[in-house]
Length: 527
Image (cartoon, rainbow, N blue to C red; front, side, top):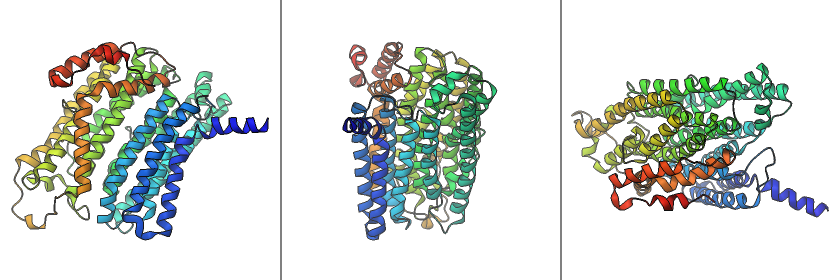
């Protein structure tokens, strides 16, 4: 009997958490190798990190086929698989673009890649959590490595300032989460997310959930919890900023999805509506006058958090729009990973050694010296702006459509108008690169804009994916729909066929050879 119990324990407990501990184990291995073989930091450690990410991806898919019973602390449903794979893709891209950067900036130390992988394992834990305590563990595992990475340039004051600000405000957010969890337990007698939200126990539960939402709002940089974002993004090493802008945001929304999916009280709908609207308006509005490219992308990141929150808000509706909205959120997280990493990778190349050229004025006329890099940067910026046929356009289209279906047309109108505002500051960078002359003085002092083979490969692959995922969006959206249906208790996405048919017509207009047969798409289901 004891053998059977042990076997069942391993099967249902260890395999449920296998995606997290496999990546954490790989991170520990990278840390040990870096400690005992310091000279391996330039080549071996990034390779070990990538192998660890690939192994964790395989474990994630395999574990989902073994551990299917919910245990009350974590889930490994289809949503977990899709979410974890998005995090792992972001981690792999982060490792690849970090390797040349940390070598160039003399930051190559073994703990860099290990911290990045530990942070990703915390993000995966947040997306799989069914319990507030488990989500808090994921939040801390995500955040603490990011505090260290933000101050990785130990000798520079701006990096020290970024790390200190992030640590102090992150600590306040963690305190909100802990106290909110305590209030939830006091009100309901449980820390299970679904059970606590179903209790509907009055003011104390409301206060507890509100504090938890404040903590997660800080992590995804929702207005008014966004004040740390521009300073931390500017001060942190650019490769860390790129990683943080994607993984931390995805982790926060993964946690929010686990809380919103069981069903929040209608009183929360208006608050989430206001948070989404305010984030979209303020992020885009303040991005317009920015002169530093990293601060501009920081406020851009804030505005995109508002778009994603709009998709999550559809989960509060007991309708198929919630499934479509969550599917659009997962799709957008994947697309945002590709285009944001691409934009920051170009910033790394343009800035040169020491990150000296980060002002938008430094980009004036740079297309004449490096037309290919300028063109790649334009692809990523146009995708962030939501210009067709790039993937960012389809991501926003699906989010806006889901918001209208869920009964939030006003929020969708705000999203469209703020997207138009975003076009202005994204195109401003493109205009500066292609249509303005370089200043006559100081041209000889400008850093080289030649990309290393690694960056050339990564930028080309990311730009190609931004275009391909945009034109061939339907299969990817169908994949994310499987995860959305799992999160929403298997509610079918009845509007999917209409969505796919509309997408087919749009794709035929953009590129007829790549059009899909809607009948075949409707028969594809995520396994």
